[in-house]
Image (cartoon, rainbow, N blue to C red):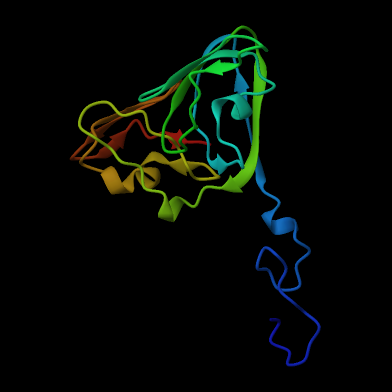
Length: 171
């Protein structure tokens, strides 16, 4: 694999030439959950995307997405109703105290994970692993979307100037 005929280099389980397997160990996304409400989206795919697995170890008590919701009823019952977190959706989490949501998994393949945007309001996620300016992040919807609002920022789309104010989208 290293271009050396008869060489000792081999591809590891991650597909890397002469690798040690660490490249596919995954990435970790950490999100601080505030007392009260926090809006979140995930850009990693864990082995188990169920609400109970993803929110395990946090002080979250309720999660609501545009399509699903679940409430934590304590150790004997857990999360009900259960559903799998969809990386293309945004969720509002309610917590009894500050805690940190930590998810380790495979980075979402942005190019092969389209986010469907319908008419009206959409709770969409942010899939890239790094920050992007709004014009780059939303290039596929320029002119089709008119407004974006996050927990802390907002921007409007104007045909004459594009997105204003210019903000950065972050994982």
